[in-house]
Image (cartoon, rainbow, N blue to C red):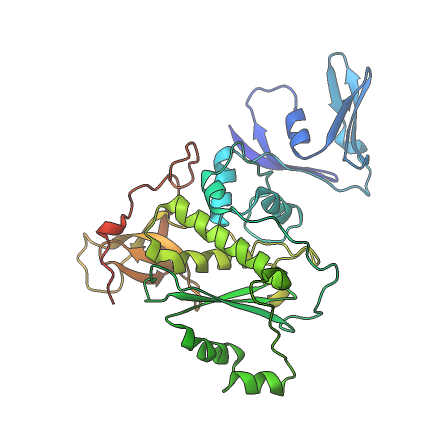
Length: 381
């Protein structure tokens, strides 16, 4: 009939199913196991333990039923039982978070590292075709055992990627990726040509000349050997994670290639708020801004949406525009929407999203097939 949370003493059970007429409150053994817990049955008792052997719940046998009395749970043990997310919920958040690994999604839940993510156990029941296509990479190189920095912005890793074969909506062909070594917070800057790099860095570092600024604050420019990316392993790993997510999202959405800058920007935005730093067990956003990020407003890249048209005089029968969600604004609290009719990009908060079709994962074919075909798009300046 419905769902709700049940709190009893020290035990909180999320998403309890209410079944009208059921005579007993029932625990699901399968969901205990889904949470990596061990369930043991004996002739007269049963128990639920962690993988480390810590005993969480103990029950006794009454006729043919094993009963757990929640009142007997020790006061120093806080037990929270998470229900398993449905397949639709799991794939929805997998795609909202730019095809983030399910293990990372569950770590975000366990550590309460973000706000707005339902407290459920997320699992995949089959392979994600887009992930398999977009996340192919070489064998990994071991990271340095000791951290190189002790504070944000102490060391920045930078790399200029390009030129891309297809220019973006804003005529950009290059991507300057900047990664903070301490927090792994990532910035992406899009350039028309290589010679824009000094100006972009000057703006980023808030000074008049890059080299003079670096020398004035005692920062040295370190180079890696040619054709030896392993020497800059941290950045290469971060770069691979960023671009494999972008390739996966673009493959899944079946959108034109000229939206590559939008998909890279969106992947960077979501990963800053969802990746977990292995050393600090926090997201890059939390380390930089000293607060927990909220992801409740995340939506699937490439899903269909409707925007309130308040930019021009309209009659009563043409108040909304149909568009495609392509990311988040970097300057305000707003969504970036590609309008199919006018072939332009706008930013707005008055948007409703249709994620139902985009969240389906029953086949290996892209779900939003044919929403935009590259031959149907006219790029406008």
